Image (cartoon, rainbow, N blue to C red; front, side):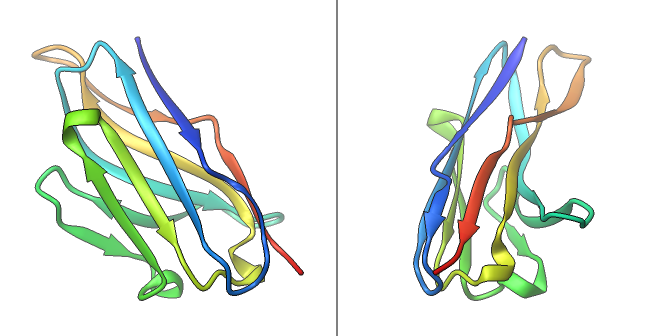
Length: 120
């Protein structure tokens, strides 16, 4: 079994910063891409940022230049540094990881979600 546990959400004023963390644990053979998604009220889930096992990153246009995704492979952890937050960033943020658990089994795993609220 594999678990992804997120932390770091909360309430912040516009222009503020938050850092999300997501640690994977359990039977892990290898972790491939790791990413962050979000779902705002009344909207579909969207990809926010993704980082490959080699460190390449990609961001959705609305967060480019404000958010930074990174990972610590030794700790099986992915981070999302969010700066200059806007009210439209308010959402539940989910981490995702593609993980190989055996030599023949690879699946996508999800965290439980953490609420980020940007409001004055």
